[in-house]
Image 1 (cartoon, helix red, strand yellow):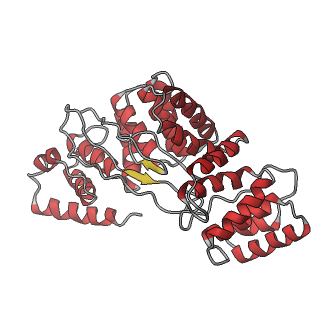
Image 2 (cartoon, rainbow, N blue to C red; image 1 turned 135 degrees about the horizontal axis):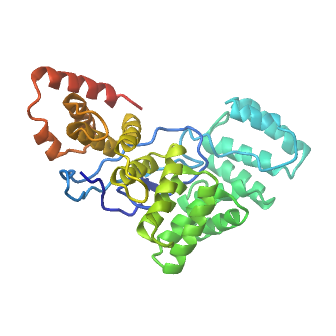
Image 3 (cartoon, rainbow, N blue to C red; image 1 turned 135 degrees about the vertical axis):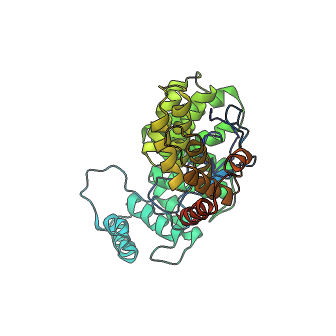
Amino acid sequence: MKFGGALATAGLWLASASVLAAPTPVAGPAKPAQPEKPAQPEKPAAGPGQPETLKAPARELPSPYTPNYVGGARPPATDRTPDFAYGAYQRGQYVTAFREATKRIEADRKDSAAMTLLGELYNQGLGVKQDPVKAADWYKLAAAQGEPQAMASLGLMALDGRGMAKDPKGGRRWLEQAAEKGQPTAAYNLALILLGTGQEADQARAATLFRKAADAEIGPAQHDLGVLYLQGRGVPKDPSRAAEWFRRSADNGDLAGEVEFAILLFNGTGLTKDEARAARYFLHAASRGNAIAQNRVARLYAAGRGVPRNVVEAAAWNLAAAAQGLSDAWLDQTLTGLTADERSRAERLAAERANVK
């Protein structure tokens, strides 16, 4: 059994959710916001020894204006002591954060961090009524003071036409300025734009920008850089470096990176083959609701590879993946001999796993 798949290209602001998709975009720093959507491949999985033809759809990554996203407003590096406004924001006390940020601006009309915080509160509708126009206004004031996070947010808003007229060129300029100041998510999104041009020089620059974001421990950026090394796009093809970036991505909680790393680990691509360790990564990703990982775990249990053979677990994970649109004719055929009791137990386990968020 060899796991693999065809790499599909994801569009801007969207990201692949598994090893079977291409470089991924990210848009904002990652605090827990919304659960990641599991991938739902379009074609049935192949049997052991056959090449995979699965293609995962892109999944949306959180951005500073994703509903309930709480990772965007962060103060720039400063020698100042921690302030009440950001402290309140981080504790979820948004009305207090708004009040304290407003006080700071009244005392200092050039307080870019407080302006950025007010922009974030208006952008998300936290403690105040959501108002993208006011959010953009505050971000612009902060950006005029050189605040990179505000520039990064403005870039996304201009690209998306949120709070202002849609302006792809202006959005890119904001991202360029933020990336030049070292803002990692701006570097990431700028890399996505460059990756989409198809130009060789842009591919190399995209890889450099992905590296900046990856060095800042942004999991999806680490995943995307790993895909570039796996494909040899913008960087020399190097499965070992790809595996390392996928591992770091997995360590940072990125589902796509976790599945990518598990596949390389299972196949022994770029690192020493270890089926038992790969199974642990697959199981973790499967338990988080990733359909591709659920399918792989089902196959491992059916074949007894990396885990003890267990037809009930195999059937349960197969049903969980199928509930998300990933059917597998080989598994269906392999598991036809289940008893009524075994099938009932598998269905119960699959139902429990379907409720995992």
